[in-house]
Image (cartoon, rainbow, N blue to C red):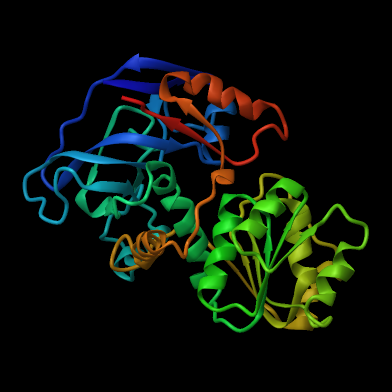
Length: 349
């Protein structure tokens, strides 16, 4: 088969690659679309892989073309998205259903061959069957949707309150939609891009705020009657939005950091005192899994994608690029601010 192989730093080559055969309990998927995740960018551009050569890709959709011995829940012809985590299922965390916290895991697309190829072989339990009415492009968004929903679950989300979503990227858009599906009073999306804020409005945000405005904080607090937000979700992993979360939170709020920072993060004593004085609860969120594996995050994404309540918009996708041009696709990320949305690698045959 052909695959986009990371051979060295900044060197992705479209090469002949050994085609895997599904073993017992495994299924072989013909990859139709594979998204470039934010975590893939440093892997390619900053020597962030575990080893060379490697085939990345963990946000994908496709068709089951072959099944291994003992597979009963998935059949040839099923459309599937893939849950990329392969937990050990034996450690204390796995036994408690906290698969995201497994220390002995493997991961499709970072520790073993991923979906930036013609085919990928995955365990049956990692294959999430979805309705054929869902496009391959939308189904490649399963993983970011589940990351967003896991954040809500980690933040002990309940409806009826004001919700702030900091960051209008793919995960932020799904976080906003999940908050609405489960009964928010009002969801407000914060970003610096008018284009992303317009997308948020199309997808159902009750209000949007451009944080480049001088008086954005007064505007944000006015929407809550100056009480602050009951739930705050930081999805961008940026230092300004992480500071902003502490300021937007209301008394006894729940604050969740879904985004991962890539620069040193510090708080002044006055910033940190927000948590003490407001007595808000702060938590993190990592990946997207729960028991039974892969979890309700994946099951509910399949359901709400199919009903149309969890919306997909062409604005999610910045560009679709043939798998053979993966090198060019990754090079786009070297230009700051160029890529606005998801880049999908697609197999057209």
